Image 1 (cartoon, rainbow, N blue to C red):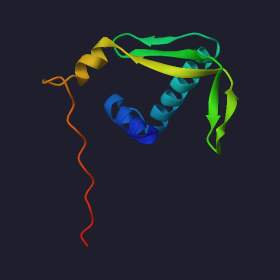
Image 2: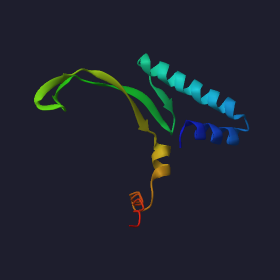
Image 3: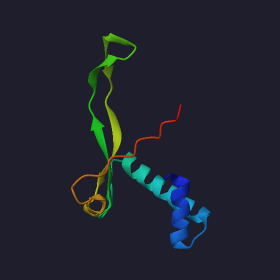
Image 4: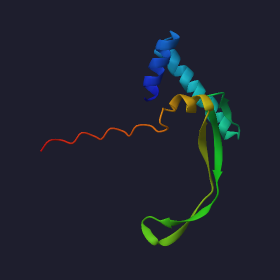
Length: 108
């Protein structure tokens, strides 16, 4: 599901226009982004927490010249930790999710 499809579902469930649902999604996105940029977290109880994590600088290998080492700078990345309700909703009996269906192969 992409952002447009999500806005359509929200509009349907909430009884608002698609434009209003898109505005709500955009506002949510802006608030989460600004909060994370300032070092905060956004917790939706039961659903999950949006947070940032700092990756330290490290040495890596240049993919264009595998024999050459390069310095990878420190970076802050977004992270999402699923909440208990979301995890429980996704659990299936047997403890694992079914394997995805194999793509159809064209007949020769």
